[in-house]
Image (tube, rainbow, N blue to C red; front, side, top):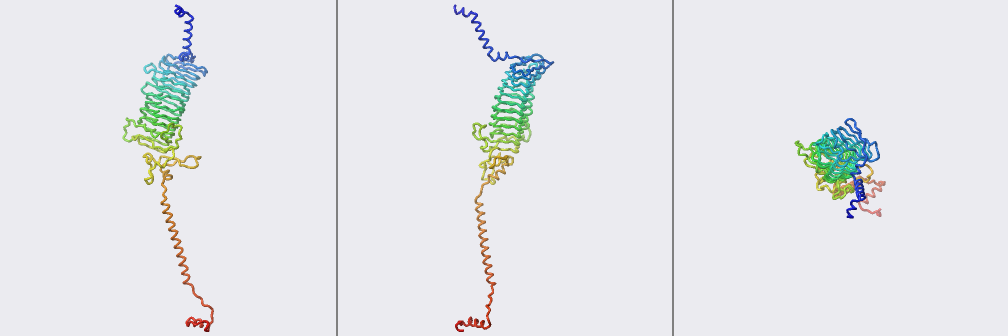
Length: 465
């Protein structure tokens, strides 16, 4: 009976309620609901939510009614809760401008395909995302663009669309710190642009997974750290253009795509690149022209990867021998001005051929367009790149000592013959001079001459005189 009486004690009930209230207040849901809401004003079919750069954390309220456009701006710290747009009608566009910190929870910007809203245009301008949660931006999305700002973390399925074909996915001037695998997964878009972006963290495998680009994928002037194998995986790309990008390291088959109409890779710098980096670029089955699809690989720089390197971003790759790149044979490969940052190794030549030729077919076919730096003692000046064919002639010709011996022997023989000829000429001159010498008679009287004549003829002695 005492135990039953204690349970009915009102003091115990108050304690239980206090504990329950403390638990609820400490939970993330309660914390989110207790945040003050942004003040939003209506202007006909437009709702404007302006934080006026308030320093305190704010939350976007549940928006309701018939509205065509929503604009959220000037927030220091903003959280968008789940299903914030569920109660809107006829919504066409929502834009976020100049937000220092933004958190998009799950289904924060979710628009049902069968709702009364139209296909949605989502724009982020100078927005710093602390988190884009899974399925934060999903549903009937037609266009989405990120211009400026930063993305600290994007969870898997951060952006998905149920529309048959979205029009545009654009990232321009965005600093991306971390995106998880399958952050962009299974949707089709007419045009995809990634320009002037800086990826400060590695791009994991399948970050862009099973996407279809029906018109053009353009990646230009971006800076990447290590890009893992199959980081960009596309089921279809009509036109692919990669220009002026820099990669610290490219692991394995980083870009996987079926190309239908055109492909150009121009002015890119690929550091620590695997020889199979471009092997997963294929010709789409819908390509029906008789001539092969041209793959333009122009003015790029490649740094071959050391075999069996564990951490390709931290290994000095200039010590690795250059490796031939592998491409699908269905492409008509066009290579121009391909610079290798590796030192050419003459051991890669077949020295039995005259002149020596590379063993690899890739190096043989494109010897005029593959450029290597000259090995010089002074490394302070700019590197001088020369075609592989010229480099082989300058540095890899086999030295023949037999030729030097033969030439030296011939020169010695000629010198010996010259000395003999010179000696013979001198002797001939002396003989000629002796024949021309005339004996001059001594000055004697007639009588003395008669006496000498008698002596020579009669053999008389001078004592006989």
